[in-house]
Length: 493
Figure 1 (cartoon, rainbow, N blue to C red):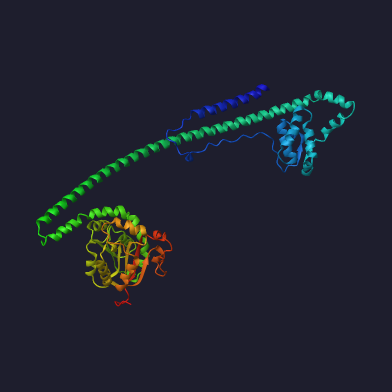
Figure 2 (figure 1 turned 135 degrees about the vertical axis):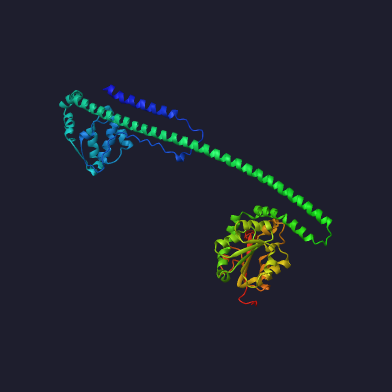
Protein backbone atom coordinates (compact mmCIF):
# COMPACT_ATOMS: atom_id res chain seq x y z
CA UNK A 1 0.00 0.00 0.00
CA UNK A 2 2.86 2.43 0.79
CA UNK A 3 4.29 1.70 -2.68
CA UNK A 4 0.95 2.64 -4.22
CA UNK A 5 1.05 5.94 -2.38
CA UNK A 6 4.65 6.61 -3.32
CA UNK A 7 4.08 6.15 -7.05
CA UNK A 8 1.82 9.23 -7.55
CA UNK A 9 4.20 11.28 -5.42
CA UNK A 10 7.07 10.37 -7.77
CA UNK A 11 4.87 11.32 -10.75
CA UNK A 12 4.12 14.73 -9.27
CA UNK A 13 7.77 15.37 -8.46
CA UNK A 14 8.74 14.36 -11.99
CA UNK A 15 6.10 16.68 -13.50
CA UNK A 16 7.14 19.63 -11.34
CA UNK A 17 10.77 19.00 -12.22
CA UNK A 18 9.80 18.95 -15.91
CA UNK A 19 7.95 22.27 -15.55
CA UNK A 20 10.95 23.88 -13.86
CA UNK A 21 13.26 22.52 -16.56
CA UNK A 22 11.09 23.88 -19.40
CA UNK A 23 10.70 27.26 -17.74
CA UNK A 24 14.45 27.38 -17.19
CA UNK A 25 15.15 26.90 -20.91
CA UNK A 26 13.05 29.92 -21.94
CA UNK A 27 15.44 32.80 -22.71
CA UNK A 28 14.09 36.35 -22.67
CA UNK A 29 14.15 38.02 -26.11
CA UNK A 30 16.77 40.64 -26.84
CA UNK A 31 14.10 43.26 -27.49
CA UNK A 32 11.62 43.48 -24.68
CA UNK A 33 8.20 42.60 -26.12
CA UNK A 34 5.06 44.35 -25.01
CA UNK A 35 3.77 42.10 -22.27
CA UNK A 36 0.27 43.41 -22.66
CA UNK A 37 0.16 41.85 -26.15
CA UNK A 38 1.15 38.40 -24.92
CA UNK A 39 -1.31 35.83 -23.71
CA UNK A 40 -1.29 35.11 -19.98
CA UNK A 41 -0.51 31.56 -18.94
CA UNK A 42 -3.54 30.33 -17.05
CA UNK A 43 -2.91 27.44 -14.64
CA UNK A 44 -5.92 25.96 -12.94
CA UNK A 45 -5.75 25.98 -9.13
CA UNK A 46 -5.91 22.64 -7.35
CA UNK A 47 -8.72 21.71 -4.99
CA UNK A 48 -7.70 21.17 -1.41
CA UNK A 49 -9.70 17.95 -1.38
CA UNK A 50 -12.02 18.74 1.55
CA UNK A 51 -15.57 17.50 1.30
CA UNK A 52 -17.95 20.39 0.63
CA UNK A 53 -21.60 19.73 1.38
CA UNK A 54 -24.31 21.96 -0.10
CA UNK A 55 -25.60 24.48 2.45
CA UNK A 56 -29.21 23.50 1.75
CA UNK A 57 -28.57 19.82 2.56
CA UNK A 58 -30.00 18.86 5.97
CA UNK A 59 -29.70 15.04 6.01
CA UNK A 60 -26.48 13.04 6.24
CA UNK A 61 -25.26 9.61 7.20
CA UNK A 62 -22.35 8.89 9.48
CA UNK A 63 -20.64 7.17 6.56
CA UNK A 64 -20.50 10.50 4.73
CA UNK A 65 -17.80 11.62 7.14
CA UNK A 66 -15.65 8.49 7.00
CA UNK A 67 -12.42 8.18 5.07
CA UNK A 68 -11.23 11.67 6.00
CA UNK A 69 -8.29 12.77 8.03
CA UNK A 70 -8.94 14.67 11.24
CA UNK A 71 -8.62 18.16 9.75
CA UNK A 72 -10.78 17.38 6.72
CA UNK A 73 -13.37 15.72 8.99
CA UNK A 74 -13.62 18.79 11.23
CA UNK A 75 -14.03 21.13 8.27
CA UNK A 76 -16.71 18.94 6.71
CA UNK A 77 -18.50 18.54 10.06
CA UNK A 78 -18.72 22.28 10.69
CA UNK A 79 -19.96 22.94 7.17
CA UNK A 80 -22.56 20.17 7.35
CA UNK A 81 -23.86 20.57 10.90
CA UNK A 82 -23.37 24.32 11.52
CA UNK A 83 -23.38 25.58 7.93
CA UNK A 84 -20.11 27.51 8.30
CA UNK A 85 -16.33 27.07 8.27
CA UNK A 86 -14.58 25.95 11.40
CA UNK A 87 -13.17 28.71 13.62
CA UNK A 88 -9.88 28.77 15.50
CA UNK A 89 -11.43 27.86 18.86
CA UNK A 90 -13.15 24.78 17.44
CA UNK A 91 -10.00 23.74 15.64
CA UNK A 92 -7.85 24.03 18.77
CA UNK A 93 -10.43 22.17 20.87
CA UNK A 94 -11.30 19.18 18.66
CA UNK A 95 -8.19 18.52 16.58
CA UNK A 96 -5.87 17.46 19.44
CA UNK A 97 -8.42 15.13 21.10
CA UNK A 98 -9.23 13.53 17.76
CA UNK A 99 -5.60 12.89 16.93
CA UNK A 100 -4.87 11.53 20.43
CA UNK A 101 -7.91 9.19 20.30
CA UNK A 102 -9.70 10.70 23.34
CA UNK A 103 -12.85 11.21 21.26
CA UNK A 104 -14.24 9.94 17.99
CA UNK A 105 -15.96 11.49 14.95
CA UNK A 106 -19.40 10.47 16.18
CA UNK A 107 -18.82 12.27 19.48
CA UNK A 108 -17.78 15.44 17.63
CA UNK A 109 -20.86 15.30 15.40
CA UNK A 110 -23.16 14.80 18.40
CA UNK A 111 -21.51 17.69 20.21
CA UNK A 112 -21.90 20.00 17.23
CA UNK A 113 -25.49 19.00 16.64
CA UNK A 114 -26.32 19.56 20.33
CA UNK A 115 -24.89 23.10 20.26
CA UNK A 116 -27.30 26.08 19.89
CA UNK A 117 -26.15 26.56 16.30
CA UNK A 118 -26.64 22.90 15.49
CA UNK A 119 -30.09 22.80 17.07
CA UNK A 120 -31.11 25.91 15.14
CA UNK A 121 -29.92 24.36 11.88
CA UNK A 122 -31.65 21.02 12.63
CA UNK A 123 -29.39 18.69 10.63
CA UNK A 124 -30.13 14.93 10.85
CA UNK A 125 -27.32 12.36 10.78
CA UNK A 126 -28.36 8.73 10.35
CA UNK A 127 -26.74 6.05 12.52
CA UNK A 128 -25.32 8.68 14.84
CA UNK A 129 -27.50 7.79 17.84
CA UNK A 130 -26.66 4.06 17.58
CA UNK A 131 -23.03 4.85 18.19
CA UNK A 132 -23.90 6.36 21.57
CA UNK A 133 -24.58 2.92 23.09
CA UNK A 134 -20.84 2.52 23.57
CA UNK A 135 -20.87 5.62 25.70
CA UNK A 136 -23.68 4.29 27.90
CA UNK A 137 -22.04 0.83 28.34
CA UNK A 138 -18.67 2.47 29.04
CA UNK A 139 -20.22 4.21 32.01
CA UNK A 140 -21.12 0.88 33.72
CA UNK A 141 -18.81 0.09 36.68
CA UNK A 142 -17.34 -3.29 35.66
CA UNK A 143 -18.45 -3.93 32.10
CA UNK A 144 -17.44 -0.45 31.13
CA UNK A 145 -13.86 -0.96 32.27
CA UNK A 146 -13.60 -4.25 30.42
CA UNK A 147 -15.08 -2.68 27.30
CA UNK A 148 -12.62 0.16 27.37
CA UNK A 149 -9.71 -2.31 27.52
CA UNK A 150 -11.17 -4.45 24.70
CA UNK A 151 -12.14 -1.52 22.43
CA UNK A 152 -8.79 -1.26 20.65
CA UNK A 153 -8.99 -4.95 19.69
CA UNK A 154 -12.69 -4.87 18.80
CA UNK A 155 -12.27 -1.79 16.59
CA UNK A 156 -9.36 -3.20 14.59
CA UNK A 157 -11.50 -4.33 11.60
CA UNK A 158 -13.36 -1.03 11.55
CA UNK A 159 -10.13 0.93 11.83
CA UNK A 160 -8.61 -1.10 9.04
CA UNK A 161 -11.57 -0.39 6.79
CA UNK A 162 -11.38 3.29 7.73
CA UNK A 163 -7.66 3.35 6.90
CA UNK A 164 -8.32 1.66 3.57
CA UNK A 165 -11.00 4.22 2.70
CA UNK A 166 -8.65 7.01 3.67
CA UNK A 167 -5.87 5.55 1.52
CA UNK A 168 -8.29 5.14 -1.37
CA UNK A 169 -9.44 8.73 -0.96
CA UNK A 170 -5.84 9.93 -0.82
CA UNK A 171 -5.01 7.92 -3.92
CA UNK A 172 -7.98 9.45 -5.75
CA UNK A 173 -6.87 12.93 -4.79
CA UNK A 174 -3.33 12.20 -5.89
CA UNK A 175 -4.61 11.13 -9.31
CA UNK A 176 -6.69 14.31 -9.51
CA UNK A 177 -3.57 16.33 -8.68
CA UNK A 178 -1.59 14.51 -11.36
CA UNK A 179 -4.36 15.16 -13.90
CA UNK A 180 -4.56 18.84 -12.95
CA UNK A 181 -0.79 19.25 -13.14
CA UNK A 182 -0.68 17.52 -16.54
CA UNK A 183 -3.42 19.83 -17.80
CA UNK A 184 -1.60 22.87 -16.48
CA UNK A 185 1.66 21.66 -18.00
CA UNK A 186 -0.01 21.32 -21.39
CA UNK A 187 -1.36 24.83 -21.02
CA UNK A 188 2.12 26.09 -20.13
CA UNK A 189 3.61 24.38 -23.17
CA UNK A 190 1.00 25.84 -25.53
CA UNK A 191 1.45 29.29 -24.05
CA UNK A 192 5.22 29.03 -24.34
CA UNK A 193 4.87 28.08 -28.00
CA UNK A 194 2.61 31.08 -28.61
CA UNK A 195 5.00 33.28 -26.69
CA UNK A 196 7.95 32.08 -28.73
CA UNK A 197 6.03 32.68 -31.98
CA UNK A 198 5.07 36.18 -30.90
CA UNK A 199 8.61 36.97 -29.87
CA UNK A 200 9.78 35.88 -33.32
CA UNK A 201 7.12 38.05 -34.97
CA UNK A 202 8.02 40.99 -32.73
CA UNK A 203 11.70 40.63 -33.61
CA UNK A 204 10.86 40.52 -37.32
CA UNK A 205 8.62 43.59 -36.99
CA UNK A 206 11.38 45.38 -35.05
CA UNK A 207 13.89 44.56 -37.77
CA UNK A 208 11.54 45.87 -40.44
CA UNK A 209 10.81 49.02 -38.44
CA UNK A 210 14.53 49.57 -37.90
CA UNK A 211 15.20 49.21 -41.61
CA UNK A 212 12.35 51.57 -42.48
CA UNK A 213 13.51 54.08 -39.89
CA UNK A 214 17.01 53.97 -41.30
CA UNK A 215 15.61 54.61 -44.78
CA UNK A 216 13.65 57.59 -43.49
CA UNK A 217 16.73 58.93 -41.70
CA UNK A 218 18.82 58.52 -44.84
CA UNK A 219 16.15 60.23 -46.95
CA UNK A 220 15.84 63.04 -44.41
CA UNK A 221 19.59 63.57 -44.32
CA UNK A 222 19.69 63.62 -48.10
CA UNK A 223 16.80 66.10 -48.29
CA UNK A 224 18.37 68.34 -45.64
CA UNK A 225 21.63 68.29 -47.50
CA UNK A 226 19.89 69.22 -50.76
CA UNK A 227 17.90 72.00 -49.08
CA UNK A 228 21.02 73.37 -47.44
CA UNK A 229 22.81 73.37 -50.79
CA UNK A 230 19.83 75.01 -52.51
CA UNK A 231 19.64 77.65 -49.79
CA UNK A 232 23.32 78.45 -50.18
CA UNK A 233 22.87 78.77 -53.94
CA UNK A 234 19.82 81.00 -53.48
CA UNK A 235 21.62 83.27 -51.03
CA UNK A 236 24.58 83.50 -53.39
CA UNK A 237 22.28 84.37 -56.30
CA UNK A 238 20.59 87.05 -54.20
CA UNK A 239 23.97 88.50 -53.29
CA UNK A 240 25.00 88.53 -56.93
CA UNK A 241 21.70 90.15 -57.92
CA UNK A 242 22.11 92.81 -55.24
CA UNK A 243 25.65 93.49 -56.40
CA UNK A 244 24.43 93.75 -59.99
CA UNK A 245 21.62 96.15 -59.06
CA UNK A 246 23.98 98.35 -57.02
CA UNK A 247 26.41 98.41 -59.92
CA UNK A 248 23.67 99.27 -62.40
CA UNK A 249 22.24 101.99 -60.15
CA UNK A 250 25.69 103.53 -59.72
CA UNK A 251 26.17 103.79 -63.48
CA UNK A 252 22.73 105.31 -64.19
CA UNK A 253 21.59 108.83 -63.35
CA UNK A 254 18.86 109.06 -60.70
CA UNK A 255 16.34 110.37 -63.21
CA UNK A 256 16.92 107.45 -65.57
CA UNK A 257 13.79 105.51 -66.67
CA UNK A 258 15.67 102.31 -65.79
CA UNK A 259 15.60 103.10 -62.03
CA UNK A 260 12.03 101.79 -61.29
CA UNK A 261 12.68 98.37 -62.90
CA UNK A 262 15.86 98.08 -60.88
CA UNK A 263 13.92 98.84 -57.68
CA UNK A 264 11.30 96.23 -58.60
CA UNK A 265 14.00 93.64 -59.21
CA UNK A 266 15.57 94.42 -55.84
CA UNK A 267 12.21 94.04 -54.07
CA UNK A 268 11.50 90.76 -55.87
CA UNK A 269 14.82 89.35 -54.65
CA UNK A 270 13.46 89.50 -51.09
CA UNK A 271 10.12 87.79 -51.85
CA UNK A 272 11.41 84.24 -51.28
CA UNK A 273 13.06 85.37 -48.04
CA UNK A 274 9.70 86.70 -46.81
CA UNK A 275 8.03 83.39 -47.71
CA UNK A 276 10.56 81.63 -45.46
CA UNK A 277 9.84 84.20 -42.73
CA UNK A 278 6.08 83.51 -42.94
CA UNK A 279 6.66 79.77 -42.72
CA UNK A 280 8.80 80.20 -39.61
CA UNK A 281 6.87 82.81 -37.62
CA UNK A 282 3.29 82.89 -38.94
CA UNK A 283 2.66 79.15 -38.83
CA UNK A 284 1.87 76.28 -41.18
CA UNK A 285 -0.84 76.40 -43.82
CA UNK A 286 -3.02 74.01 -41.80
CA UNK A 287 -2.64 76.10 -38.64
CA UNK A 288 -3.57 79.36 -40.41
CA UNK A 289 -6.53 77.69 -42.12
CA UNK A 290 -7.86 76.50 -38.79
CA UNK A 291 -7.58 80.01 -37.31
CA UNK A 292 -9.43 81.58 -40.26
CA UNK A 293 -12.22 79.02 -40.32
CA UNK A 294 -14.21 80.98 -37.73
CA UNK A 295 -14.96 83.70 -40.34
CA UNK A 296 -16.61 81.31 -42.84
CA UNK A 297 -20.21 81.48 -41.58
CA UNK A 298 -19.98 85.22 -41.15
CA UNK A 299 -18.90 85.55 -44.78
CA UNK A 300 -21.42 83.13 -46.31
CA UNK A 301 -24.38 84.68 -44.47
CA UNK A 302 -23.74 88.19 -45.85
CA UNK A 303 -26.42 88.88 -48.54
CA UNK A 304 -24.09 89.89 -51.42
CA UNK A 305 -21.93 86.79 -50.84
CA UNK A 306 -24.96 84.52 -50.49
CA UNK A 307 -26.23 85.94 -53.79
CA UNK A 308 -23.05 84.76 -55.55
CA UNK A 309 -20.90 87.85 -55.24
CA UNK A 310 -17.10 87.80 -55.34
CA UNK A 311 -14.79 88.07 -52.35
CA UNK A 312 -11.43 89.77 -52.95
CA UNK A 313 -8.69 88.77 -50.49
CA UNK A 314 -5.89 91.35 -50.49
CA UNK A 315 -2.47 90.15 -49.41
CA UNK A 316 -3.72 86.60 -50.03
CA UNK A 317 -0.31 85.08 -49.23
CA UNK A 318 -0.22 81.31 -49.59
CA UNK A 319 -3.99 81.21 -50.13
CA UNK A 320 -5.30 79.69 -46.89
CA UNK A 321 -8.43 81.87 -46.85
CA UNK A 322 -9.00 81.47 -50.59
CA UNK A 323 -8.90 77.69 -50.19
CA UNK A 324 -11.47 77.80 -47.37
CA UNK A 325 -13.79 79.98 -49.48
CA UNK A 326 -13.40 77.68 -52.48
CA UNK A 327 -14.28 74.64 -50.37
CA UNK A 328 -17.35 76.55 -49.09
CA UNK A 329 -18.48 77.26 -52.70
CA UNK A 330 -17.79 81.00 -52.38
CA UNK A 331 -16.41 82.82 -55.41
CA UNK A 332 -13.09 84.38 -54.42
CA UNK A 333 -9.84 85.66 -55.87
CA UNK A 334 -6.69 87.09 -54.32
CA UNK A 335 -3.95 89.61 -54.92
CA UNK A 336 -0.53 89.98 -53.28
CA UNK A 337 2.50 92.23 -53.78
CA UNK A 338 4.77 89.26 -53.10
CA UNK A 339 5.18 87.38 -56.36
CA UNK A 340 6.47 84.26 -54.63
CA UNK A 341 3.38 84.17 -52.38
CA UNK A 342 1.00 84.63 -55.30
CA UNK A 343 2.80 81.89 -57.21
CA UNK A 344 2.47 79.51 -54.26
CA UNK A 345 -1.28 80.22 -54.09
CA UNK A 346 -1.66 79.59 -57.84
CA UNK A 347 0.24 76.35 -57.36
CA UNK A 348 -2.64 75.23 -55.12
CA UNK A 349 -5.12 75.87 -57.93
CA UNK A 350 -6.33 79.23 -56.57
CA UNK A 351 -7.14 82.44 -58.42
CA UNK A 352 -4.31 84.72 -57.26
CA UNK A 353 -2.30 87.44 -58.98
CA UNK A 354 0.62 89.68 -58.19
CA UNK A 355 -0.11 93.37 -57.75
CA UNK A 356 -0.92 96.36 -55.55
CA UNK A 357 -4.24 95.91 -53.72
CA UNK A 358 -5.23 99.61 -53.55
CA UNK A 359 -4.50 100.20 -57.22
CA UNK A 360 -6.42 97.03 -58.09
CA UNK A 361 -9.47 98.13 -56.05
CA UNK A 362 -9.44 101.56 -57.68
CA UNK A 363 -9.51 99.93 -61.09
CA UNK A 364 -12.64 97.84 -60.35
CA UNK A 365 -16.17 98.80 -61.25
CA UNK A 366 -18.08 100.35 -58.36
CA UNK A 367 -20.25 97.87 -56.43
CA UNK A 368 -18.63 94.86 -58.12
CA UNK A 369 -17.46 93.08 -54.95
CA UNK A 370 -19.39 91.34 -52.18
CA UNK A 371 -16.55 91.56 -49.66
CA UNK A 372 -12.95 92.69 -49.24
CA UNK A 373 -10.86 90.70 -46.79
CA UNK A 374 -7.28 90.96 -45.62
CA UNK A 375 -5.40 89.09 -42.93
CA UNK A 376 -2.34 90.71 -41.35
CA UNK A 377 -2.17 93.37 -44.04
CA UNK A 378 -3.32 96.70 -42.57
CA UNK A 379 -0.50 96.81 -40.01
CA UNK A 380 1.96 97.04 -42.94
CA UNK A 381 0.39 100.27 -44.29
CA UNK A 382 1.21 103.87 -43.57
CA UNK A 383 -1.67 106.04 -42.35
CA UNK A 384 -2.33 107.58 -45.80
CA UNK A 385 -2.40 104.15 -47.46
CA UNK A 386 -4.67 102.74 -44.71
CA UNK A 387 -7.27 105.44 -45.35
CA UNK A 388 -6.91 104.93 -49.10
CA UNK A 389 -7.57 101.18 -48.63
CA UNK A 390 -10.85 101.79 -46.77
CA UNK A 391 -11.95 104.34 -49.41
CA UNK A 392 -11.09 102.06 -52.35
CA UNK A 393 -12.81 99.10 -50.70
CA UNK A 394 -15.93 101.19 -49.99
CA UNK A 395 -16.20 102.18 -53.63
CA UNK A 396 -15.74 98.63 -54.94
CA UNK A 397 -18.27 97.05 -52.55
CA UNK A 398 -21.92 96.43 -53.34
CA UNK A 399 -24.46 97.72 -50.81
CA UNK A 400 -24.36 95.57 -47.64
CA UNK A 401 -20.94 94.28 -48.72
CA UNK A 402 -18.33 94.22 -45.98
CA UNK A 403 -14.66 94.56 -45.19
CA UNK A 404 -12.93 92.13 -42.81
CA UNK A 405 -9.36 92.96 -41.79
CA UNK A 406 -7.48 90.87 -39.19
CA UNK A 407 -4.38 92.27 -37.49
CA UNK A 408 -2.19 91.63 -34.41
CA UNK A 409 -3.90 92.75 -31.21
CA UNK A 410 -1.87 95.31 -29.21
CA UNK A 411 -4.34 94.88 -26.32
CA UNK A 412 -2.21 91.80 -25.63
CA UNK A 413 0.97 93.30 -24.21
CA UNK A 414 3.16 90.41 -25.39
CA UNK A 415 1.99 91.01 -28.95
CA UNK A 416 2.27 94.78 -28.80
CA UNK A 417 5.69 94.83 -27.12
CA UNK A 418 7.35 91.78 -28.66
CA UNK A 419 5.91 89.46 -31.30
CA UNK A 420 4.52 92.28 -33.46
CA UNK A 421 8.07 93.41 -34.16
CA UNK A 422 9.23 90.02 -35.49
CA UNK A 423 8.12 91.18 -38.95
CA UNK A 424 10.42 93.94 -40.20
CA UNK A 425 7.78 95.07 -42.73
CA UNK A 426 5.25 95.95 -40.01
CA UNK A 427 4.54 99.68 -39.70
CA UNK A 428 2.97 99.96 -36.23
CA UNK A 429 0.35 98.22 -34.08
CA UNK A 430 -3.27 99.29 -34.65
CA UNK A 431 -5.53 99.39 -31.57
CA UNK A 432 -9.10 98.15 -32.22
CA UNK A 433 -10.74 101.50 -31.43
CA UNK A 434 -8.46 103.21 -33.96
CA UNK A 435 -9.58 100.92 -36.81
CA UNK A 436 -13.20 101.35 -35.69
CA UNK A 437 -12.72 105.11 -35.97
CA UNK A 438 -11.26 104.85 -39.48
CA UNK A 439 -14.15 102.65 -40.64
CA UNK A 440 -16.75 105.02 -39.17
CA UNK A 441 -15.24 108.12 -40.72
CA UNK A 442 -14.97 106.47 -44.16
CA UNK A 443 -18.70 105.72 -44.26
CA UNK A 444 -19.03 102.12 -43.02
CA UNK A 445 -21.75 100.96 -40.62
CA UNK A 446 -22.53 97.90 -38.46
CA UNK A 447 -18.92 97.98 -37.29
CA UNK A 448 -17.83 95.18 -34.98
CA UNK A 449 -14.52 94.21 -33.36
CA UNK A 450 -14.04 90.44 -33.43
CA UNK A 451 -11.76 89.32 -30.62
CA UNK A 452 -13.19 85.87 -29.90
CA UNK A 453 -15.10 83.23 -31.85
CA UNK A 454 -18.45 84.25 -30.37
CA UNK A 455 -17.97 87.76 -31.79
CA UNK A 456 -18.51 86.28 -35.28
CA UNK A 457 -22.22 85.92 -34.47
CA UNK A 458 -23.78 89.20 -35.61
CA UNK A 459 -26.93 88.62 -33.53
CA UNK A 460 -24.86 88.70 -30.32
CA UNK A 461 -23.16 91.71 -28.68
CA UNK A 462 -19.40 92.10 -28.83
CA UNK A 463 -17.36 90.48 -26.06
CA UNK A 464 -15.47 93.77 -25.67
CA UNK A 465 -12.44 94.43 -23.47
CA UNK A 466 -12.72 95.98 -20.00
CA UNK A 467 -9.50 95.24 -18.10
CA UNK A 468 -9.86 95.01 -14.34
CA UNK A 469 -6.27 94.14 -13.52
CA UNK A 470 -2.86 94.10 -15.14
CA UNK A 471 -3.02 90.41 -16.03
CA UNK A 472 -6.05 91.08 -18.25
CA UNK A 473 -3.67 92.74 -20.70
CA UNK A 474 -1.85 89.43 -21.10
CA UNK A 475 -4.99 87.31 -21.54
CA UNK A 476 -6.32 89.03 -24.66
CA UNK A 477 -6.35 87.11 -27.98
CA UNK A 478 -3.22 87.58 -30.06
CA UNK A 479 -5.25 88.75 -33.10
CA UNK A 480 -8.48 90.65 -33.67
CA UNK A 481 -10.48 91.60 -36.76
CA UNK A 482 -12.64 94.57 -37.75
CA UNK A 483 -15.88 93.84 -39.59
CA UNK A 484 -17.73 96.77 -41.25
CA UNK A 485 -20.55 96.94 -43.82
CA UNK A 486 -21.28 99.33 -46.60
CA UNK A 487 -24.78 100.78 -46.00
CA UNK A 488 -27.73 100.02 -48.28
CA UNK A 489 -27.18 103.36 -50.03
CA UNK A 490 -24.05 105.29 -50.83
CA UNK A 491 -24.96 107.90 -48.20
CA UNK A 492 -23.47 107.15 -44.82
CA UNK A 493 -26.04 107.08 -41.97
